[in-house]
Length: 373
Image (cartoon, rainbow, N blue to C red):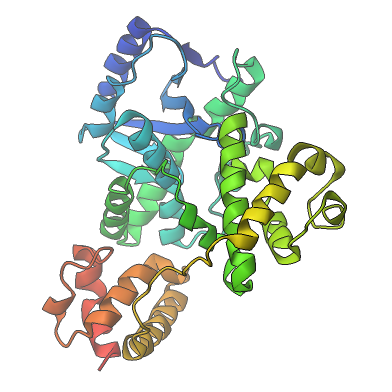
């Protein structure tokens, strides 16, 4: 079936008319596209909004278009907002526009709660609706203007089928008595914090392999991490396009002193050496004389709490297997660890743990307490 052309919104008046129509609907399918693969500070570049009979594509980069009115829609409890894998979209919209969210339905989480074998949107659309998404658009630069007609045709598919998918899942959730659980999960997704923009030099400890380096190499890695960030800002590129983490580790381990030492290192291609060789060697030289960085201070291991945590993981694994879902659908790792640290002897001692909402507390609270006895 041929779909009607999506409606591109680039001006305030059409935005107001669209919003008036959406606010009269019981539910709206929503998705976003960002440019994280192409710029240093990513931004939301397209917002897809679908209702029966119409797919709207809002261009946040259009000059003079204020997204603030859309905040009414996302905060309105009367209109359900249907996302797939909503957390990233919600984080980015909160960061860029300051929106708040309620009445959210996440079709990815619904699929997980229902124990579906397929949870990716492309796989679900092909299985349930016979729709095949063109993968070549998954790495498209959504920040580039003008927007291509084929790109817009692809983007609308990410929101167009969400209403029908929600209907299928809502029926299954109701039949299995899982709707209360789903609503609690959706509420937790809606409450996620905005995506952060801050850069910290100490984030170099998050580079895979950083903790395994010798102290002097860790000092070099820190300087390389700073150089990469500075260069990424200057070029307005994401840091991984300047230099991958594996290359940072390889250089930090090798401690090269001259350009000839760079060519044999993982990721240091002739083009990389031409572009960044001088900066890399300068960073290495600084790292060779810089103070040794101190690892972040963590509390000493709480071995009794860790033992309780393993007991709870074993309990959760059994419950998840019986239901046919992944373990974190039952209770998140963070909530399990918080419970392990409290060592509850009564149900009331679990109250207030983030991720253990009323439904999970009612359903699993006594089991958690019993598992720790």
